[in-house]
Length: 327
Length: 281
Image (cartoon, rainbow over all chains, first blue to last red; front, side):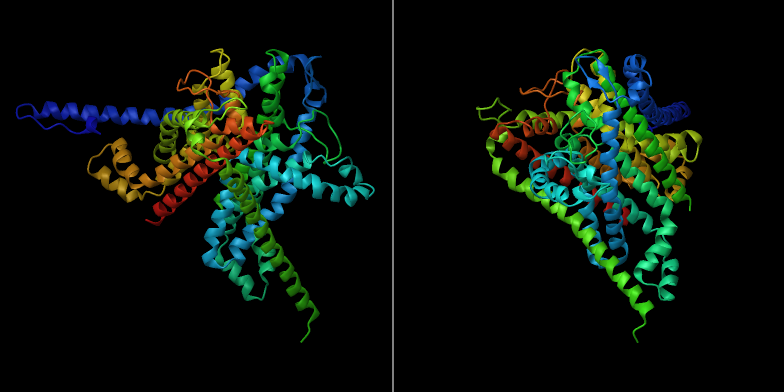
């Protein structure tokens, strides 16, 4: 601030001082401009840097295994055979389970908050749901391992094995002993984690529906749910899908919550009660023990795959949300 | 007047209403369960030792002093690097960039960074700052946190600056104020609480991150203030002790979890209160 203050004009050379002061102002003005544009460029470079550094680190693994790295389920550090299929499979399955639960529940909460909730309670309940998003992921992890896993093992998994496990066709999904740890447990914890994201974005886009449209539908005698189903959701479809994709991006990359409850078995199993792993859990678990060389490079390659996967999902989400804003 | 068509619609409406109510109760129940477990397990292990002693091997009474200090130091480094970067970049987007091509691209990339997996950021900083130096360091951890925190500040700074009425800027410019002074003395002042909101949200996010620190700060069981060496932090010690077989270490993990969660939630609640205040004006 003091640098920009215009100095008191001296008596004899006020024109000189004026020129100097203006020069200094011009200098701070341009340098501030370049500082802001430089910072903006650094943001660009960061993402580029992530992509490049991961690719460079992953290159030895890609060169060694080629395309096979993507489809091989081998993961054997002693034999130096690595493949990403197990981790990719676990990442996709846990994310699908999480989305199957979080999308309907998240939308339900958003509908409740915008259409049903008593107005004075709207803000407190909204904030409470958003607090769920504020809880650090490691807390979900420790809570999942100490409280949720035993419940899964004692009650939920035996129940699933006894009921759904006997239905021909889908029974194989619920086969095997109830460990408590496993893909399903991880998917459920993920569902709770991404629920607030879906709710927050859906609520915001639901609020963009012009009240006139809703009032018109109510006016011709539609029930609340005919209004939601025929007016609100069609009007906000693009935005809702964008929010859902954003949550999917979170689910794909989530590390700590998953690492604690998935069991970290590097084997593909069809049962969702079985232990498994995800890309991020595998990196977090094995990085410390990895020797430099092919092992570390394979973990970096997993990181690169995760980066590309989430980049695509997030880019699609942002594109859809931007389209929604144009409306 | 039993119109079967009408009663069917009403029934469907009733079913959906009940489902929405239960979805909300489901969501709130998780929050209550998690916070309840944290209080239940966390308070039990809280004592003065937690704040005055460093982590110790099993069998010795230890605390979390080194982790708490480590968390503060690394969040401080993250803030020192991330805050200027984020606020300046956000200023560019709102004040200079507007709808230009560069601004559009930066905005898009920033939105992606905002929700990019933190573990990937950790690997990036590992490649950038750990491999060339040859050892883990709190500095690398702080830089990783800066990469995670900066996009939040970019976003809030831009959003907040966009709330400043243009007449305010025009009035200042009409008095002959150069652009940068208008921004720094008029626009920033008008949205000061908004900028603080962004900073608080970023601190909350940075303090809670674990994944990127595994590959950068690594953790350290000793008390240290040296940013060029490995350093402990609350998330890292929770990660380590929660999987420990020793009861006293598990207890410390829960106490750490309690401290961490309430620090993070307090930060984000105050950020929310501030931003509500800023938007009312």
